[in-house]
Amino acid sequence: MQLRYNYRAYPDATQRRALASAFGCARVVWNDCLRDRKEAHAAGLPYVKSAELSRLRITQAKRTRERAWLADVSAVVLQQSLRDLDTAYKNFFDSVNGKRQGRKVSPPRYKSKKDTRQSIRLNTNAFSLQDDDTVYVAKIGGLKTKWSRRLPAAPTSLTVTKDSCGRYFLSFVVDTEPDILPEADTDAGIDLGLSAFAVLSDGRKIDSPRFLRRAEKKLKRLQRELSRKVKGSKNRAKARIKAARQHAKVADRRRDFHHKASTQIIRDSQAVYVEDLAVSGLGRTRLAKSVHDAGWSAFVSMLEYKAIKHGRTFAKADRAFPSSQVCSACGFRDGPKPLHVRQWTCGACATMHDRDHNAARNVLFEGRRIVAAGRAETLNACGAPARRAHVPAQRVEAGSLRKGQTTQAGIPGL
Image 1: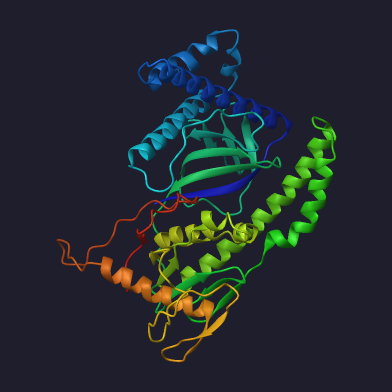
Image 2: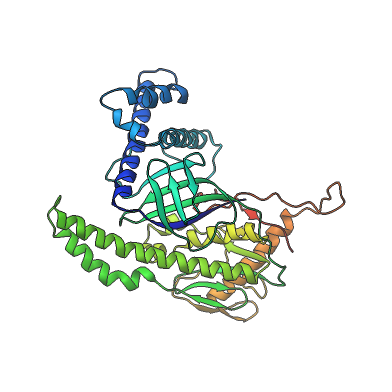
């Protein structure tokens, strides 16, 4: 299983200049190679291979006067930029051909030095972990790193990132074995909402912290100050960093809350079931700000990869499943209800329901049905039940599945 570990880095002034040069060189190689492929496509010529681009835009370009400064950075950075372009094209072609699920992927675009996020990627030939708790990066030096926790194994790749507020991060990819937790006796259905962030099928409620709403007053003031500054001035750059830092604090608090809540749920439950919400559609309604403030997609992604990591069962109920319309006591479908109706009485069995708790129980029943229908008790050669293979855990959302499809991950425990 592949996991990603992020750490804060503190480069000095010389290293910041070297990193800025590396970011720029990687961007130039990406744009040059992308331009060659677009021009070849427009002229009706065959797809330009990576080996040809590497020879023209990296090896020979270093010998020219216009691109001689490409030799100032590590060759691994330039080659990895070309590999990333190949990956972007592959994702685009797979999306067009139907091999990639989820949303359609756009073709690669040109990168700008004004992008709020700059990054470079390196393999093990261009970085190493030092005994003095620094990370040596080729042609940059030893980066002072804040080790919040130790790496479980030797990293296989490194990504150096600079975010919009000027912070630097080191992201390591590590191959590790799953950390299987002891079996639990309970399973949980989760209903995500806005009034309460999550309601579990056992009645527990997780309050919504609303980090963006709480910081909205300060953000408005910072945005006003930014809009009043002259474009291109140093004061505008300072005001932009202040606003970006406040947005970063909101994002960090939300991510920390998601991690703590998802970890607690995975530890307490042997199986976790959630509803596949159409977050992109809800983001275009009048509830858009509250929906994005909740961050449901990131939370569900954390639940999924932590279930894989710790040997739990995870399943998504279809987004068309009427969790809020069905009575969890007798199964009678009572029809749709507006959002302001938080409690209702079943017309068949006269049971009084809390809307969110009833939906969580229905998600639990639907998740059990999905797992039971998808789990075949086949035996392997040793006579033991066959288990699903572990898949790499993703830190970022890979896209929503198409309507009518469900996902299952982890080891079936029910």
